[in-house]
Length: 461
Image (cartoon, rainbow, N blue to C red; front, side):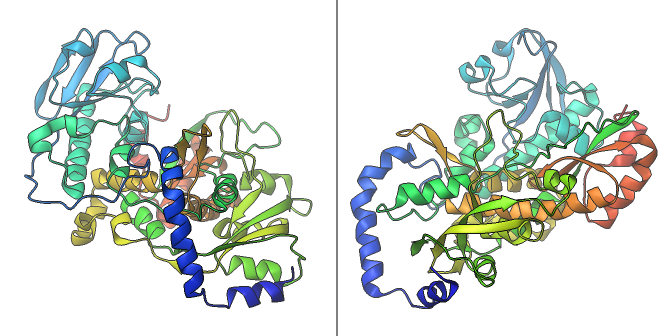
């Protein structure tokens, strides 16, 4: 099919009959598809109205076990409360959510309802400390005074989340949030993304899933170790970054059409990067350097078994086509065009009513988990595989596009890029270039970490 034929198709307005057929197919397929979505949909059912919720804090402390592998003796920290030595998780107060230095796979996390892993906020304890210029080991151990500071940040985070989403924590306390990650409790409050037409659901979801990439970890062609170097993760202000992503237009998802056997000409690529499209394409890096191909990290998400990337969403296609040869063979086109996310899917009104929220690190953690809830795959119980939605694929593609531009700037400045994504850029830097890194951070608008504080506290040793 030529570009002229594609343009002719997309310029036709969807008919009333097409809309009626779509709605009928949705109704007929709803009962069949519901088991795939889990309890009340893994993206969350339409949230109930918030009515007269009594405002209350939701305490969240830190428990640092002396030996995380043993889950025995440790120290528990809460804001404005003396530190408490514990012999096991059984000694912890049951009216507090406890973020620990345990792995998310630790069995004790499942058996103690108020105990969470160090990845509860989708950011490791050590990374939170790193952002704030606090000295911490890789397993989260830190000075007692610093642990209290981090516990204060976490209590504020949970209190903001409870107020933003209308959780009745005054009555239920920590029992109101029962999931292993904050993003999963937030997901229950969000609307579902547009469901594909059941008549071609599996094909479209397969394309969306193969276009999904949640992290970018370059696989450099040669070892690049430098002596006396340190790792630093630059991070944007999370509230502002998430707001920017969520405000981008998404495919409306109402009228997908598949175009096979594309006869690619000089206009095909331009059409695809200016319309809501998913494309199946061959990517060739022959005209790019090995370093540029590695930096793009196409299909390199740092997993033991990365998802095979055969498809690209329009935001990713736009920048990859500037660095590689792209040959398109199949197109999924949403003829219903672009739309903004519905209001219930955007950041809660608490953020828009208080612009100063962007200054709060705790509010940033809530915003980041809100974005994670929208931009994560879900588990299909029937087929036993993870599947992506149109929102998740587009948000990840937008994030990759934005962060690749930052990674490219860092690479051109001579810094070694370890990974990027989620508004963060992890670099390896020699100590004698830390001043340059601080200047790079300031120039490109990164907010964290406090590099000067980290140097002062010898965190980068």
